[in-house]
View 1 (cartoon, one colour):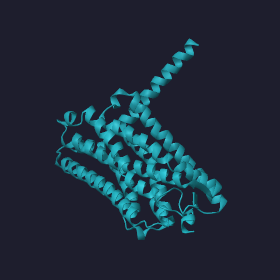
View 2 (tube, one colour):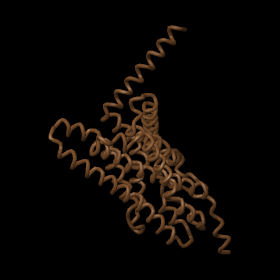
View 3 (cartoon, one colour):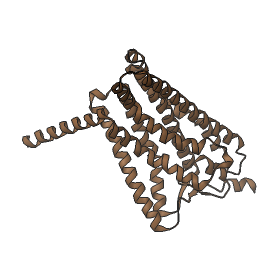
View 4 (tube, helix red, strand yellow):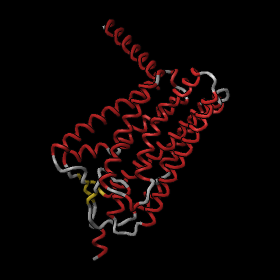
Length: 319
């Protein structure tokens, strides 16, 4: 009888947010606008980097990787979130839930590693400008990019495999809008101590190690900037990394609060609110920060736009 009960749950039900339809409709419109803007902004950055030869340098190749990552990072959770806002109750199969868990944490780990690599790139550019072309060649840049993706997708692999062996025998309601780790563990009727310990250990190692490496790079950058004699040189050096530092602060501030803590301290209501920031808001903030604060990107955008207008005008004349 116990074995039979353990095979009864084949799907979960997302509870999402408030049951008031007007509030859910308002959230739907807000999240949809943010999602579309995020997709547009990140796609635009990728397009500009690919079209403008002057931006095909390590710094902007990493930025293109980050934008590509953000597109899939939001797509892993936001479409379900939008559907939940409209229908209030939304189901997902157990296998689909585990798949979402894996891809969400894989891309989250990839972003942590990639942000650390981008910080290291800025460290080399500012602290070792003469040796920068050698230390961060195109080949090294591509290896770092590939390593970020490979490392990110390997990091949550073992916890995901262990989760797939858990039994779920009720209840089946997930008090969240995606398959986060804590809600999954709460629904299992198996002993989750090992997989919880492994999952939190992996996430803490990835988050804290990449965060410390990032802060170490910026620590050296700050020391180097302070030693510069010229005020203009200081301003120029800081402007090259200010955008990245802003993104790092926003992203790590939310995920450290969410995942580097004892499991028993988890609050589902607070967890959902915090998740909105790193699942929905941060992927939109990234392209806004990089485009609004970066003169090279804005210049390249105007250049590409002018080329497209010229090409369109020529085609119209030929017709």
